[in-house]
Image (cartoon, rainbow over all chains, first blue to last red; front, side):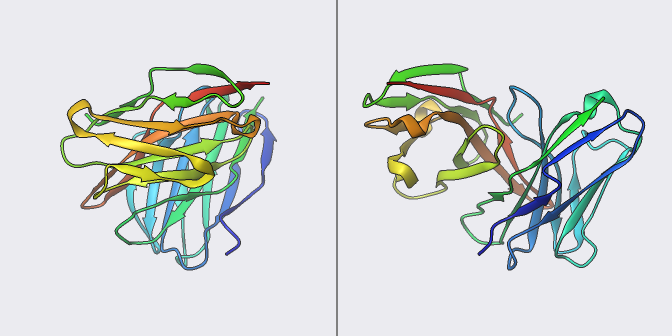
Length: 114
Length: 115
């Protein structure tokens, strides 16, 4: 069990550029989640996949955001035309469909938009 | 609407002292409740969870939490704090049903430990 991994760990970009983050969940986990955390706040839910199906999207996920999980394994989160307000920690979590419903988090990708 | 409140933004305790971090939730049904810990610049580590059964749950690193339905609370406790416990602690409630499957987090409590 190598845990949830995310890449890159840090990203600095200029306003208006596109960025893409990757998340590799724990191998047997069929559920994958994306959250966003801004300074001084708790994580906020963005979206949820079960296998390759994107089942729920938050209103926080504007048209500039898109997430995919093409083969039900790793996932990508793309932000187009980044804005300074997109600066945050983007966290990925994975889990299995069991009674405990635990979510295991990766180390996050810190995005800074200048 | 479902929500989680952590009334204490920042707490300082002395090493070896006991600790209690407060968490109140708003949820109509029996909740799934979680405590996570986050060290600076890191992701979240699950400390413990409650979803049924014994209302006093034990977690990792010597932490425990008690679910009190009458008070809508799920407070985190530790009898003796170590310097390595300094971190930010988040309480969360799980929302499940249909296509919904997510955690709602509180704003966190930052714990400082004095030598």
